[in-house]
Amino acid sequence: MKSNPWIYALLAATALAGCHHQQPAAAALQAKAAGSALVVSSGDRQTGVIGSQLPQPLVLQVNDSQGNAVTGAKVAISGPAGVVFDSTQVLTDDNGLATFKVQLGGSSGRYELTATSQDAQGKPFTLSVVELAVGYPQEVGREVNDKYCSRCHNPDSSAEQVSNYDNLAVKPHAFTSGDVYNKFSDVDLTNIITHGGPSLNRSALMPPYGNTLSKSEIKAVISYIRLVSDPPYVAPGVAYDKR
Ligand code: HEC
Image (tube, rainbow, N blue to C red):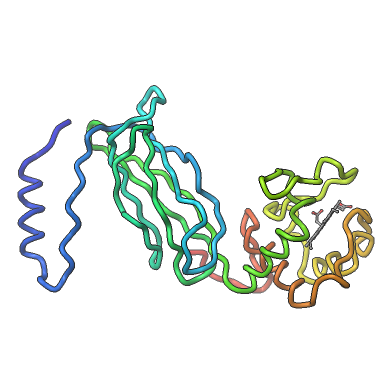
């Protein structure tokens, strides 16, 4: 690996000349190896409550050009304002994994995190992952989903729940299916959730929840559906800058 001692001298000088009130910069981590690609091992696309730590750490792997895991590669991570990491740079472990604990910021929505590493020529390569932060109504909605909806609407079984999806003669859609869900108005969603499938000329396999859920719980589950939608939901008549 090429390294230019002048760069380090310059960096050190800049750091020393820096404002004395600032925190001293964390000792720069030295990469012991270099890879050529970053891939997600686990922990992307999680949902957490605003301001809290995500339930699972984000685990990324550095691979070389043959796809073998690289130990000792440096991975730096960054995210939008408000996101806090347990450390912003780590070296990959014996399995080529870099693990970050992620605390979400204070506003709900999508958080795009960017991890960066460098190849043997010092050229950076990056990987972006998305995490979701839910505020209060969306958090209630997520709980309603976990308790009542996901057993049919989520085709995947988990340790906590066996999916009923495969048993259904008519298949519901996952709440993340923006191409389907974005076409429903809030009124339509309220109707089908309150009165069941037949209210929108659909199958009675979609049960009515008007007697089980309060109006605000139904609103909450709709706001959760809007949040997880991919592509993202854009409320009619509301124009906003996505950035
Ligand atoms: C017992 C299984 C079951 C449960 C539980 C269930 N649904 Fe459904 N749902 C269905 C089925 C089946 C359909 C498809 C109906 C059709 O297309 O005719 C459906 C359709 C829907 C639709 C229309 C869009 C689509 O996916 O086709 C919405 C909205 C919906 N469900 C919301 C909910 C909400 C919110 C909950 C939890 C409060 C819930 N469902 C719980 C079975 C279920």
